[in-house]
Image 1 (cartoon, rainbow, N blue to C red):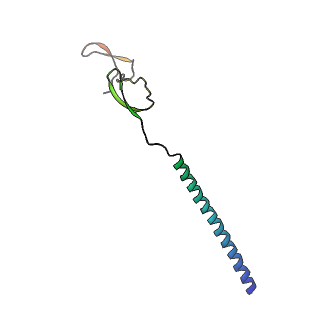
Image 2 (cartoon, helix red, strand yellow):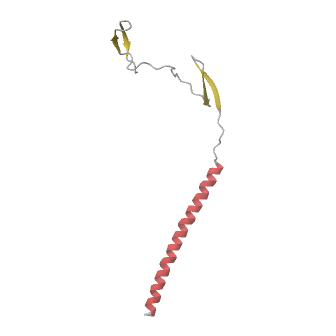
Image 3 (cartoon, rainbow, N blue to C red):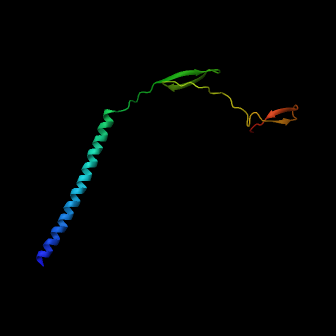
Amino acid sequence: MIIEHNLYNKKILIIIMETIFWTLLVVITFIILFFIYNLSYLWHKPTLEEKWQNYMEAPFDYMETGSNPLNFYRKDQYRKPYRWPYKFYQSYPLPSMQPYALL
């Protein structure tokens, strides 16, 4: 009976030791990966320098700020009426064809 009890305790002890070993192995692996990630970030640290420039848009000399390289594109300063170019007949104030307007 004592021999069986000792064998049972040894098996439990072996299971506990294996569990502790694998847990420590996983924790140490994560710690090493964490340090590798932090070191790689420090070596390739992004610069926080932003190269902003002021420029003027035609035709109304509208001032904008942008970073380098500046990308210019046509940006209309007005909005076409709703459902352009469809029109409807309007009798006031003068009889005419008017585009739809959102009121």
